[in-house]
Image 1 (spheres, protein in one colour):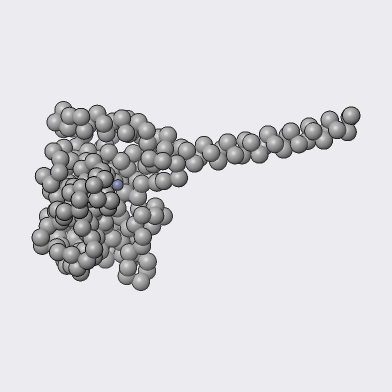
Image 2: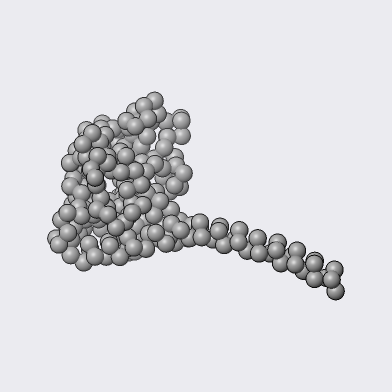
Length: 242
Ligand SMILES: [Zn+2]
């Protein structure tokens, strides 16, 4: 009996350790989803009456002092880089929600660069920035999407038809208007701009922007505090502000 009880004790200890490790892993896995939940509530509050919260809005064409990129559209930064709507998923950029709805909120180029719109892109353009202003010597890409109606009728400006390649645009150039096309016809998102900063593959092409490891936090490019959205309860401020 004594032997059995000591074996059981050893196993119990091991099981407790394994349980603890699994618990920690589960918590790490769920954490991004947990911290995103309050942002859903705040976005709901904004969208229920955008005019009541003008101080929550970014203003297209303005920029934080010293920021390399300007704000590309009007609206509320509802979701940040790394946010999560379901366990295992991480958001690859910024979502900026229109105060006025479909096809009414201009989207501007946040920086100078060379615009490409692939032949099958209904709602998307990508702009090549040859020199990363925050890490000179490497090329980055800025990806703008959701510029179409729920069925994929495009709101991308007529200056950039499907198949456009390497067309120079200056910062502030009109690219289109905010839409809600999700890529799945008839299944719209809320009206917003999704903006991603995408890494180059080193051969002059952009990496898959749907994978978070291929993207960068846009915060420092817009002059916002890095990881600004770690604290959802605070107003969004420029990095130099208190
Ligand atoms: Zn997004």
